[in-house]
Picture 1 (cartoon, chains in turn blue, brown):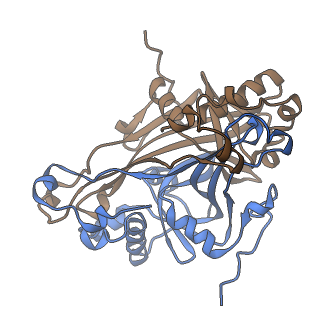
Picture 2 (tube, chains in turn cyan, green):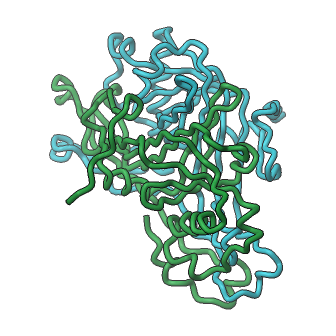
Picture 3 (cartoon, chains in turn orange, red):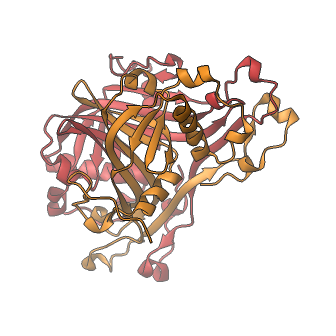
Length: 217
Length: 217
C-alpha cells in the first residue's frame, strides 16, 4: 500500500497552476534526494535571509548543515524556516515572449528547525548529509571525533508541511501564435560532471575510487 | 578606473570565513549573470517563504519574474526581500568527514522590492529576464503586447546591499589527516546541456537557431 499524501495546508497548497502541485511523498522525496543545495529562509530582525546549505534526508526529517549556519542559527530552538530545493530541467522557448518558461522540479518545506544536540543523532545526521551528496563516501573517510561533532551545528526540520511543484514538457503557445516563424522547444539542462581532480597527494598515490568515478546526478 | 566596491553593512559583511567574502562589483555581477534561478525570500505572516524565480540584471537593478509571484507579491510596495543566487562548482572530498565541503559562488542581496508599474520599464525588464537566460532570444520571438505586459508581475530590487561568497580549490585537510589512506580531491560540477528538443511543429519545419545551438552556461 502506498503511503498517504502530505496533508495540504494553506501554506503548501499550490494555488496558481494547481496542476503543477504535488503532495505525493515519493515525488517530494525524489526531488529532495536529487538536489545538492537547499535554500533556507529564516526571519532575522523582521527581514528575510536566504542561505544556501547542504542537507540530507532521513525518512521524514531533513538535516541542514552549512557554513553560514553557525552564526545565524546557533540559538535555533523552534525557528521558523522555509527550505526550498529547486532542480532545473530545461529552458522552455515559446513563440511568444510571455510563454517562455523553465522546466523544473521544486520542493518547499515549512517547519520549525531545531538544533540537534544528541551526539548520536548528530553524528548520524552529519553522515547522512555527506552520504546524500556522495553515496559511499562516509565508509571511506575518517569519521568525526566527538569534539568535531560537538563543534558542528546541525538543524533538524520535519518534512511534514510540504509540497512539490513541477513543470515539464514543451512550450504552451497560444493557438494564434502557432504559425509564427519562430523556433520553439526545450533546451534540456542537467548537472555536468567533470573528471575528478585529485589533490596533490592523492594524485600521485591513489586510484580514484569507484563511487567518485561513477558519481552522477 | 574600476568601480568602487559595494559598501559593507552589518547584514552583508561575511563574518565567518571572511576570506571567502567579496564586495567587488564585477564579481557580484558575474555570478548574477551566470545564474539562472534566484531564490527569493520574503516574510509572510511573520514566517519565511523562499520562492525560486527567474531574473535579469540591468546595471545595478535586479528584475524578478516568476509564476509564484503573482499571488504572493501582488501588493509589493516596499517589500523586504533577500535574493540569493548560488552556483555550484564542485564537491570537495576531504580525508576527514568534517572537512568535506562544496566549491560554490553565491550572491546575497538585501533590499526593498518594488512592483514595476511603468509599462516601458516593465517591458524592458521582461525582455532583460529572457535575454539574461538566453541571449538573442528576444529579437526572435513575438514581443509582449500591452495587455500581456499589464497582466504580468515584475519586481525590481536595487543591487546595493550585497555581498558574494566564494569557495574554490582543493580540500583543506588537517595536517594530521594527510597520511590517511583516503582519496581526496574535487568532483567539478557545472551545467549540462542536452540537445535542443523542438516542439512538434518546429521539429518538422525549422532549423535550430544558432543562439539555441550555442547556448552555454
